[in-house]
Length: 571
Image (cartoon, rainbow, N blue to C red; front, side, top):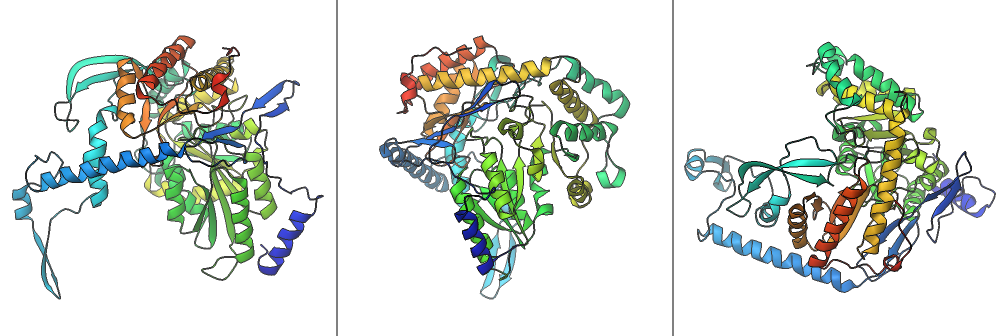
C-alpha cells in the first residue's frame, strides 16, 4: 500500500483524471434511482430521508435532510435536565431515609459481615463486598428514569411472535419496581418483532421440518466445534448459505451478536485501520474494539466523510507506528436497525476499490428482506457479491430462528474457521434451529417447489411502501428509505416513550419505543418492524392507532411537502 508522497501523487492523479474507471463521484442531490431489470421493468430505489431538528441542511450521500426548528431540540434537552434534577433529588431522599429504596442493594447485615479491608500507605480503607455493576450516573439513570417506564419494556409473551402475539397481563403498585400477573393474556398486533418474512410460526413446513430433526439429531451437540464438530444440519446449511449468496463458502454460528463481536478480531489487528459507520450496531463496535485496531468513525452514509478518512489514512499512515496500515477495513450495515436507512453500497464498493481497502457488510436486517429474491442489499443495488470481502448476516430476523453467518472466499472462511474463538468456546448451532433456517432458505429460493418465498418477499415490499407513505401523509417524521421495513417514527421527547408504549397497548398494538442511550438524546423514537405476515387490515388498524396517539402526544413535526400529497396510495 502506497503512502507518504507516493500516496499524495496517487490520490491527486486519481482525482484529476476523468478517464479513471475507479473515480468516485459523490452525489450532491439525492434522488430516486431508476433502473431496468432483466425484464426491462423499471425499478425504483428510494433515497434515505432524515428530517432533523437542527437548523441546518446537509444533502448528499443518497440522503435527504429537511430543515426544522432548533427550538424542538432545546425543549428536549430541557426535558432531560428536568428528569435528571428530579432523579438526584430522589437519590438524596433515599440516601437520608426520607424515601424507601426499592432498588437491589446489599442488605445492611450482609454488608457488615463481609466488609473487607485494604491496607494502603495511608491506612485502612473499608470496601463493600460487591463491586457496583454500574457507575453512579448509570445507576441513577436506571433507578429514576428507566424504571419509571419499565412497563413498556420487557413484556413477557405467551405465544409465537408472528403477525400477532399474546402478552401476559401484568400490573404494578410500586411504579414499575415490581409486577404482578393477573393470569390472563392479551393478543395484540405485533409491530415490534423482526419477523420480516413471517417465518416465526408454529405451523407450516418449516416448523414441521425443525421438529422432525430433533428425533434424528437431538437438541444440542453438548460440545464445542473444535472438540467434536457440528451437526449434519449445520453443514448442509452452510453449503446452502454459500449457494444462496453466490459465494464460495460460508460458516454459521449459534449467536448473531457473537458473529460480529468474536470474528471481527480475527480480521484486524493493531496494525490495521477499521473505518466504521457512525450508527453501526453494538456488536460491530465491540468487535472493532476487541480487535485492537485503530478505529475511525465516518458520518452516517456520508461518502465524502468516508473518502476523506481513507485518503488521510493512506497519506499519513499509522501515527502510532510511523508505518502504513497493513489493512484498512470498512465496516457498514445493509439496513441500520435504528435509522431504517440503507447503505450506499455501490459508492462504498467504488471507494473500497479506489483505495485498496476491504469491506465488511452486516446484513442482519436486510438478508431475506431486501432484493427481488431476498438476497439482501447486494441484490437490491445490483452489485456483485464478490466485491464484498466479508458478507455477514443473522438468522434471527427474516428466518425466524437464531444464529448468524459469514460468507466470502473459501480461503477467508477457512481462516475464520480455524481462528475464531467461537470454535473453542461456543456450541455449534442447535440441529432444529439449523433445520428451521435451511427450510426457510429453501422456501425463499423456491427449491421447495412452491412460490411461497417469492410471495412473502413481494408482500413485505408492498406492506413497507404502503405503511411508510401513510405515515408521511400524517405529518410524522419517518427516518430511512421507503424500501426499508424498519420504520422509525421520531417523537423526540423521552417522556413520550412511556406514553406511546402504553397508549398503543391500550389499542392492542405492540410497538417498540427507544430512547437514549440507544439513540441520540434528542431523537427518541417509536420503531416499527413490518412483516409479510401483516394483512392490510392489520396495517390500517395500526395506522389508525398511530394517528390517534400522534394527535394526543403532538408529534407531527414534519415540514416535508409529502404530507400534502393527495395522490392515492396503492396497496
